[in-house]
Image (cartoon, rainbow over all chains, first blue to last red; front, side, top):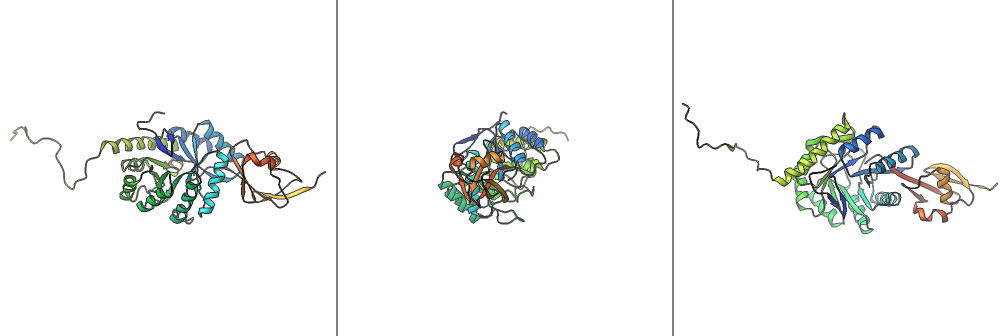
Length: 260
Length: 70
């Protein structure tokens, strides 16, 4: 698939698409396949769980068939220790040092635990992993994650699966402006305009899972969000007009015919 | 007949022949050639070491792979 933007580069890994997809909340492997194709994604994130002959092999074969890069994540981990072990298991299973570090604080808010996330990021980065760190939308935390060695920072727009979009666009913009590593908006996207906004704010990419996999028509939503990521990227580069409280005429007042 | 060694695999009780290695267990479990990782008593064992890693009585084996999620 052609994209109207340059590839996303994370720690030397190139991805043609700036839309990263999640496999969570999918209804079936067949539907996931259609959605992945429609999204044009290059990189898909997967969880690490106990081996299940049917589920594990089917997903593995699908990602291989679609020639997608796999981004293992540490979803389900509540501590740095668990996340580090999970990342090491993923590296052994998949032969990749790329990992999305996700350490959540509890199973109701699903919000990332900043302290444990930073610890895991530092330890894994020191061990040679390319860490993409899932974070709250805090510019200072993003700075700390980068200092700890994160290869990309992934601030949330809003809580996982909430579909509330970007609740603090000022923070996301500040993170995008001040980070020296790619900023990927992760979590909270509900529909295409949320993804477009993330890119307009200066994000380098967007990760979506629920927005696509729980949509009424997942492949259609995947295609819509892929278009939005492109549109948002182009709009960011085009430089939007400043917001004003009052109207600014776009037609000249000179040369008006005298009609009365 | 050789004696059986009692272990757990992903938290469930299992038996392997005495003197089995992780390669033997992988065959018994029908593990695919790629996409899985094994931890023995909490330590990750690289696939290259499976053939020389003996499973002993009471060993806890964890076998993981990818799953939809995250």
